[in-house]
Image (tube, rainbow, N blue to C red; front, side):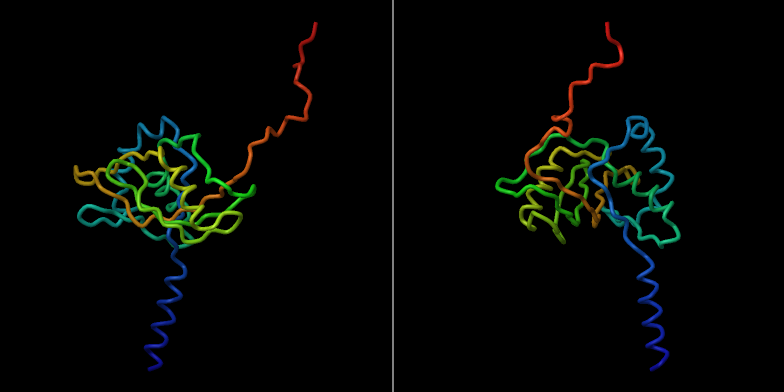
Length: 183
């Protein structure tokens, strides 16, 4: 019995050392990186992903392998395009909200299957979901090719800080900058 308990404790402890990468959906790759992406992906598929039939998942990484995790996140879950324009949910108070969510990237490189796991701040889960739907509507990823087939990336975890309310120019109270050249 003690043997089973110690195996259970060790396996639970081992699982706690692994963590699924959290992807950022609001930072995009620069154009040079996008052009070299497919070559780098071909070399790292087995390192970064666990694939089956028509879908892949990012591997979980131990805390001492943060560098490897970062490379995998850049290659597989960083958008190639993020729109700067989106619609904020109606009747939401001004403030910020931390949104934790899961999603997948379809074969065309679009975000699908968004599910909000937690929402802490001025927006509730439903408002956070609407915010994410609008924010990610035009977001694009480079489609993933595995063995010459387009493949989905599933079970991704995301985290986003959403700012809501009216936009106000931070420098509106500052005098106009005349520059250093004056006649």
